[in-house]
Length: 114
Length: 185
Image (cartoon, rainbow over all chains, first blue to last red):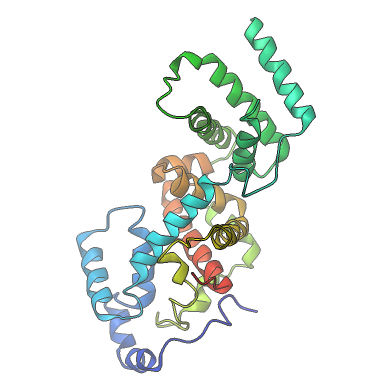
């Protein structure tokens, strides 16, 4: 099954609007896919004035894409929180083996004698 | 050794290899022992140790004989038989084929109850583990450790130019994975 295949389609109003406007928007670099990519790239670099303007114009007129910046920010926050909690005992059961602990303790002891 | 397990879990979450994670714990504790006088007690000991471990993990990636290459863009996608999974979300004219907000309500607010939060985090971890290794490394160094793009690219063994494409691709894949799991807040 292709990724995203079981996700629901966008609302009918969007599809009708896109059927009419899509070729023009694509030619202007204002299609939803471009906006999607720009929203992601904005998290790694400063967009050029032209890109920034294109994105602002698109987000202001596309109801479906207007929540993308908040979604990307929310995802960044969620992933950071998840990874920062990864070493806390309540989220995973992995622990260092007794053998490894002994080996590390021996190593530290030998270093402290040096 | 009371912090060793936490350090081990942290290292394992990044390098996905038990032996390497054990070696990193040893290196980290050894470095901490040498720099003990620099610990001023402003943060907790565990926070200080995790800070050292982050540097050890980054060093590990830098030393892993990764040669920066543009081919990494393709190598990172090997498991997709050449197709970007995000292609299936858009029409050829660049319009959405699917509702882009469906299943992503959890990004608007963090669930209050711990069971729900743990479930959400488990899904995030599962989605991150689905990323090809090089994408996951690059993405974690950038998004979690906060390295700038050139530094993250260098440590992950990709060129800075490729990194921009790969980071976008990682975000798209993660977003799609979370969306497909559709966890509600």
